[in-house]
Each structure stands twice: as structure tokens, then as C-alpha cells.
Length: 103
Image (spheres, rainbow, N blue to C red):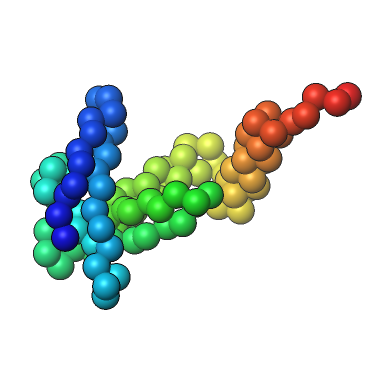
């Protein structure tokens, strides 16, 4: 597999095209591997979100969830209460994005 095209899309985003091999393997572009310190044996999580595939290093995933743990302590919330707030915010975001304004 080889990286066919690289496109720099601004300060925080990098895109690259790779082909999927017959056995399902993909090559993560060298620039991304270097930047994210992805080495052989690294565990990665693949998440399918609204048609996009997000790839996270497992050690970064723990850091992501640590933020939620810290926030629940700061706000004196249970994890269930925080989850309810996240669900409300997701619904609010959905309503704003897809509201038809027929009222």
C-alpha cells in the first residue's frame, strides 16, 4: 500500500489516502504515525460515527474519559447525571442542526 495523495487542510487537520489491502489492512501515513507516536504493537480503537471512522490510540481514549471523571467530581455529579446532561446536549445540538422551523 502506498500513500497516493497528501492534502494539508489547515493547522489541526491532515488528510491522506491509503488503499485497503485484500486482507483488510491499512497503512497509517508516516506523518500521522510520527505525530501521534503510533508504533508497531500500539492498540487502536476504531469508532464508526455518522459515516466517519475515528481512530483513537487506547492511551488517548483513557485521557478522554479522565476529563469526564474530573468534570463529574468538579460539578459533584454522578456519572449517570453527567450522562443525562450529555444526552440533553446531544438532543439540543440535533434540534438546532435539523430543526425545520415550521412553528
